[in-house]
Image (cartoon, rainbow, N blue to C red):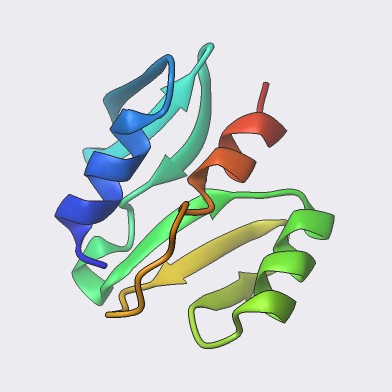
Length: 95
């Protein structure tokens, strides 16, 4: 997954808008941030997840997700293709 893929997937979700957070691309719905490309230079996209969601994502796909203390999760750039990306879970957790 590239930064362009991450952006395209995030923006395909209903009600999502892209904005600049600290000069870096971020995505929100209903005024709440659910994802960003704050770590895109390192090849990561960030999802804002609850601790429970983070644990589930990391358990299901440890080769894709890195846990971050506090409930965020970084999505590792990968060639693995998913039917439906996890951004929707992050979007729902921030409503």
